[in-house]
Amino acid sequence: LAVGALALAVLGAGVLLVSGGAWGVTSAFSLWGSELVGALGGHPEHWTWWQRPGNAEMLAGPVLADKTSLTDIGIMIGAAVAASLGGTWALHRGIPWRTALAAVLGGGLMGVGARLAGGCNIGAYLAGIASGSLSGWLWGAFALAGTWVGLKLRPLFGLGNPKPGDGVC
Image (tube, rainbow, N blue to C red):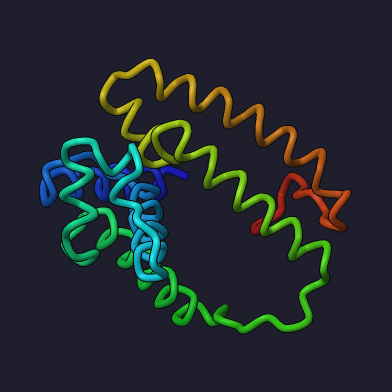
């Protein structure tokens, strides 16, 4: 736990020093989705979000010029390398439909919630608390409540709940 906390603190400080802004994750997903909509013929540049100063420039620029996109890509590459080095990289086949449904619903709800909250556990919670913002503490309280609800819903999808002493959920 202490090593994880130290790693998050060092990584958060590193992102701040390199990019000049707090560590974030979810704004890149808005950018990627909007770029996809634009590639399919839509016009996300007319959406209110992309009319705001700073956001319009982000949408107009290349994805690889966006600091959050670069950070997210780095996280994914780092996770893949760590899983490979740890011998846990595996392509799962035959995932039960209830497990897949839970993953899609949970991921969708977490994504929408993160955007409504102005960020995820990194941008809204970690950076919020680090900057002394009350919103970070509120995010944490509601995340605990959401975790409780999620644990109660897991059995409906055929998923077990972690027990004390489990090393991996």
